[in-house]
Length: 192
Picture 1 (tube, one colour):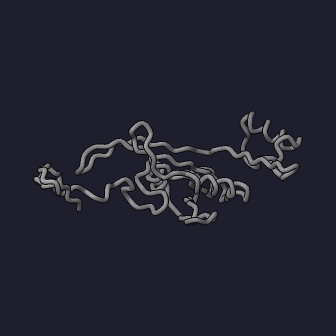
Picture 2 (picture 1 turned 30 degrees about the vertical axis):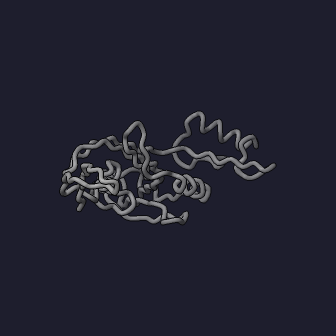
Picture 3 (picture 1 turned 180 degrees about the vertical axis):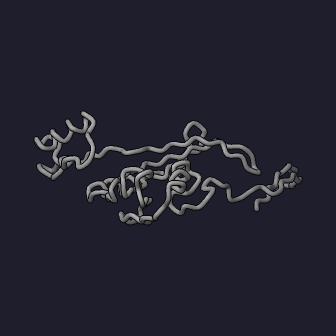
């Protein structure tokens, strides 16, 4: 974090961290076996939703961290290394308090200007499978809104990323005789 900021202003804590880096207390280049990389988080997107389908209602949440670059910027080599490691160590699905949470890790957003309003081009980036390379796709502002709402899958840009793939098409109860001769009721579920 020793590199000076090119655009905009730092928050006071980031400015302090840069000073500590320049003074050698938080070195970004290995010295005495220590190198520290500090990077801010541009945006964390967290959506709460209650989808309803043929099976019923369920509560879901989705998370994603977005690194925003302006003026056709790209992540630095150091950012790419840090974000790649953070991305591959992110668990995709977990339950928190009985709610299924999908964490899509890191995404990248690059504007030709400074926002969708003043940009001729918008790029959406995700890490390639098992590689620290970013795969970029050109998108428009409407697609960006759908991505930030998780109406589109962040990797494939396909609709309905939370659609259940196996609906219960039929369920019935039958009596089953166990090897010792006991009769029990068994519910059989047929999935499509």
